[in-house]
Image 1 (cartoon, rainbow, N blue to C red):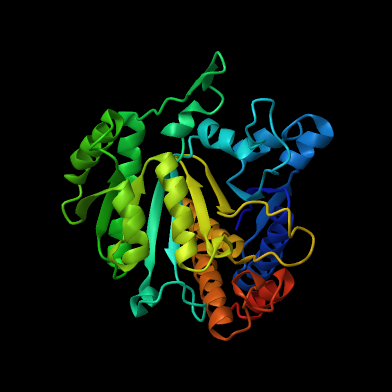
Image 2: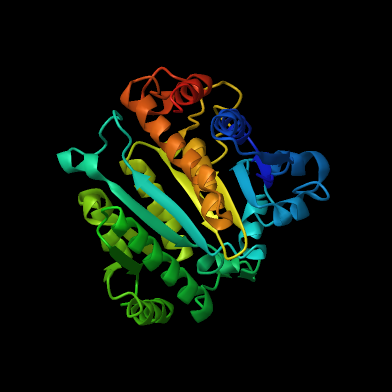
Length: 359
C-alpha cells in the first residue's frame, strides 16, 4: 500500500501534547493494520508568531495544502493578538483557503463518564453538529470596521453555493447514520424569523431537502435549539447551522457529554480535510501532562475513516473503527478517566489505555 501524506500541525499549548498522543496511537495502528502514513510535522501558531513574526514557517502552508489530510492540535494564546485585538489563528484562514466548508462536530456520551444531565436518556446522546466554516458571521474576520471609535460593524454572509454543499453534506451524513440505525433526521438551526440572511439559509435548506425524501427535515430557531440541546439532546440527529451559531452550540454539545476534551471535529471540503480536537490550547495546563487526549484520538479516527473512504483503503476504515472501539473500551474499563472530568488519569495514561485496547 502506497503512503498517504499527512501534515501534522501541533500548534500551541496542549496541542503539542495531544498531537504526540495521536502520533503514538497512529504508530500502533499502522503496525496492527498494515498501512503507512507519511507524517510531516510543522510548527505554527501564536507562540511561533511571537518568536518569528510569522504565523507559520515558509513551506508549511503548501505542505498542508498538498497533504492528503491535516492533523491539527490547537493554535492560539490569549495573550498574543494582532493589533486589532483578534487572535493569531492561521487555521481560520485554512478553512477559507482550502474551502473546508463542513465542520463536523460529533456529540456522543462515552461509556462510564460522569452524567452532566440528570435525565437517564442522557446516556443515549449521539448527534452531530454540522458547522458551516467559510462564511456566516466569520466572513467578516479581518474585514470588520470601527467607525470614528463610536460604532463597529461586521457583516454576515450566506451564499447559495456554499449552503447547497453544506446541506447536501448534512443530508448525506444523516442517510449514512440512518443506515447504521440512526434517526434519519436533519435539523436546520437558524434565526429566520428575524434576519433576511437566515430566511435565505432556510429557503435553500428546504430546496435541498427535497432531494433527500428518505430523510426528515426540520427547523429550529437557534435560541430554542440552545435550550433543547440541554433539555432533550437525545431527540436530535444531524443539526446544521451557520458558522457563529454552530461555534457556540457545538461547545454546548461538548459540555453536555462531559467537556471539550471529549469533543472531536473534522473540517471537510471537496478536496481537503483537517482534523482537530474542538478544544483550545489551554495554556494554563500546558506542559503538565494533564491534557485530555480523547478528542484528539477520536479526531484521528475520523481522519482515518475519511482517508479510507476517499482513497478506497479498507484497512484505514478498519483502523478507524478499532480506534473508536479502543477509546470506548478504555473508558468502559475505567482505565481512561481523564483529569478533565474528575478522574486521576493524565495525557500519557489515557493514551496508553487506548493503545493497550487496540484489537
